[in-house]
Image (cartoon, rainbow, N blue to C red; front, side):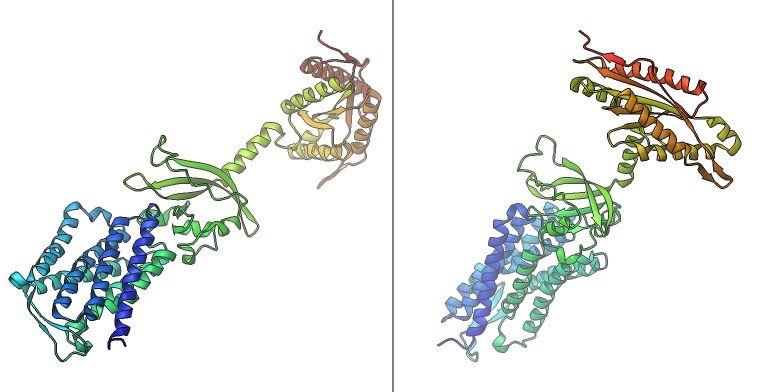
Length: 541
């Protein structure tokens, strides 16, 4: 058979068990939590209080009751100041937690504990202790002494102070942290209400309701601790600077669970919400990029580089078919003892820079107007082709051509029409070239094509196809069609064997093609002329 209060005792024991579990959880994850020691002491104090309360209710004598009351006071007077410390830490008020303040907060509970343990000698805490014969269970009537009132005022001061701090910070609190804040408020308000009910004599048989209430508050704390990252790296960045940063910032713990993020990060990852606080974001990350989350450092990896060392990488990020480039910086966050506590991932939009770099690379190899490769890149590519031709024993031809009477087009129609003529010729030429041909703007209105594998006669035929394409398609303008023709010179290198100086070989081909082009212009333009003799390239030996 149980006592009349068996259900209450069971609830109180449950609160004690929950506090033990919280202490074990934080201890086992101490490298991933801040304020570890403080929270473990908090859990231990709650456990002493609740287990002592349960055993007090099941005591069978006044001596047993007093023994278990003393056990309760090992933890009870320390709970309010420790709770206040945890709240100040959560609100990033660590700068106020000086050593003198900490010692002052624990001086009063320490005196209370000493007075309770020696109450029989002075009765400063309890004036008298008697059995309540009217209660349904063995219950003591405790008459408050002067220090009991002082300790009560201190307890209420700590609890009300915590409530005031949380309410003051509520409006500035990031939405994703309001659930944790609300949990702390409930954890303070319920015991405050319970204390007032108890002091007003409104509880059955004068029972202390706080241990029962702690079943609810402890369960809330356990939930928010394990699923919402209550003690993770919360003080790292929650000020106006963090909120107003243009770069996206994610704060992760050591398990890649989200601890905090700023509005810029929510813009970059639209799915991000307070729901993901305390959860891994790897699945959300993979929705936007093929690059994995930056790897965590191995313990001590950054020691040589300092506490703020970071790793960088550039990734392509896609949101709803729109792509941007971000530079990802992963920085280790350390505690005061330099132990890793988490990390910051900063996402910096570098799309404009990447596009500029790509444009500069494009301009380094291509003509800015026509998009054809430029003269410098053509020389390099032609040297490669000639080296391959020498190695493989295959011919290489070069066709050089320019637009006939190009100055007349500029003079008659303007430079815009001249630019259009260049684009027109490039488009027509590309229609008849092979994929392996290398086409470039050689300078001004002059163009050049390297044709690997073609003999001089085959290059001549290719040049005629280009010439016919250009001559057969006038350029249409607002002032009417403009007929355009071009003159061509071709030269070929018949390779015998071995290796030769590719650069000098290309220069020789270009000079031969240029002489042939000059001959084409002299003979009436809109025609193709060939170099007089094939160049025979052999080994430099």
